[in-house]
Image (cartoon, rainbow, N blue to C red; front, side, top):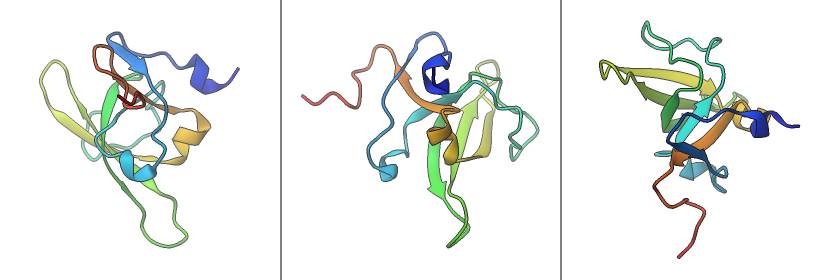
Length: 110
């Protein structure tokens, strides 16, 4: 069974399909079971399973890996933590897209 299917989702969130176009990643929510090997720009690392907002997708130039710039807000104090994760986490199944359960899926077309 793939890692994507085994990914635990935080209560109140549901897994959705990865957006078809990479340009559509910005503004979407993602989660990962394990953030332990990520170095945030600040001191606090999001807890495993935390839901983060994708703020941008970037690369250092030709031949370099693309990265996703994520924001996680602490539910207790509201402090924003920013971190970079490899875009390859999506294809590896380590990072999955989620949305609040009450919202209509971004894949559903009216």
